[in-house]
Amino acid sequence: DETQLDHEAIRQAAASIHSAAKSLKASDVVVHFDGIPQNKKESAVYLQALTEGLILSNYTFDELKSKKKDAKEDKTETTFRLATKSTDAAMKKALHDGIILAETVNFSRRLGDMPANLMTPTILADSVVDAAKGTGLKVTVWDKARIKKEKMGGLLGVSMGSSQEPRFIIMEYKAAGTGTKAPIVYVGKGLTFDCGGISIKPSANMEEMKYDMCGGANVIGTMLAIAKLKLKAHVIGLVASSENMPGPAATKPGDVHTARNGKTFEVNNTDAEGRLVLADSLSYATELNPKMIVDAATLTGAMVVALGNIHTGFFTRNDAFAKQISKAADVSGEVTWRMPLVDHHTKDMKGTFADLSNISSGKGAGSATAAAFLEQFVGEGIPWAHFDIAGTGWAVGNRLPYCTRKGASGVMIRTFVELARQ
Image 1: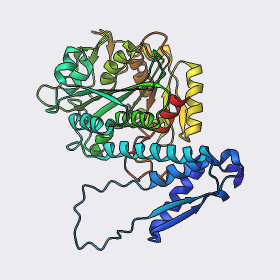
Image 2: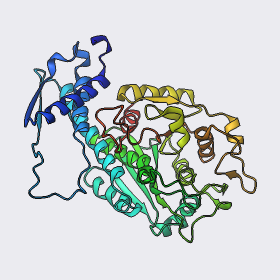
Image 3: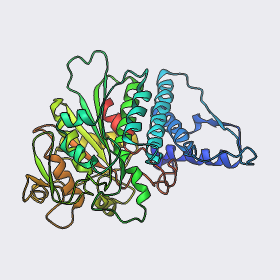
Image 4: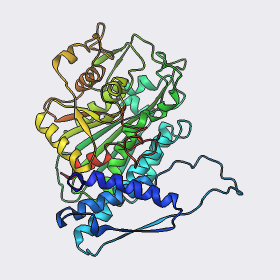
């Protein structure tokens, strides 16, 4: 139905084209573009969506499979050509932007899909340094000693049960002519593996906890895309990366740690660790006097219960900012849902022996109380939004045909880039 046609439908149609081409073992496919848009106004938007859909659909993660020389598997490489009579600059830019966006999403997906033994905090930080070369993105990495010196008690406390050192990754992109403009700061949770620590998780599906770094991976993708698109913006990305393991020095339930901004918290459940590494990251983000802070984290199982793997839930008390986010999500074709955050949630996070507890004293609303905890580390008056991608960070292929069935999705990168563009 043509009235239902929008750019997200085009993105998904591109996945069908890709799949048909692969099943036909076609080596060369021409997509006649001019018959798709109903009017010229949609052309550039649709061309970008088509480009994104084809490149996103082409992602596979099979580099860890041994390649047998005598394997009879199909090696056909498919070349897609987009044919259009149009030669205007907007179309060329749409193609260019679509390629960059989709390729950075695929880069972030690979970071998520890589198993935890091959994607430690150190490897993650090194991957960012390598990927940033030649993009204009400045990368600084703090090691364990520096993290300790910087009083990041949350990140340090979470990492103590692991033999892997934590890393704090700082990425900055500043376009010429942005002067002293306050930066937009993106913050990502980068837990390269989370077994829950002493409060250990059930073993069923625990292998999926290599995906606990998807918020961080997608902030990295966002920063790379902004730099490669050369957006006229001043943007900083922060990723706190660690493993959460039950080693002999691990944080114990009841332990009290101090975050960078001086607030103390009781760790009453060591599996509520994402909020502790984000506490330090948000404290540091606040010190940068930002225009706004956006964080992304695979934070709570409660979010999966609430919204499944369809919507990404986000929290903010700032109505104007919420409108801006919804607009950016519409432009990017990603599906979000604003969740409630009120003073009752904040009260539920008060500590008995410290300022805060890392789990709620009440029942239910696990995602909202987690957001209320994070809010304690954001400076007064700074527009802030928290995206809980626990349901949408991986295994969304049954909803979005351009995502792999079980792998990382790269969710929110397109929306976050659009926020910076706006």
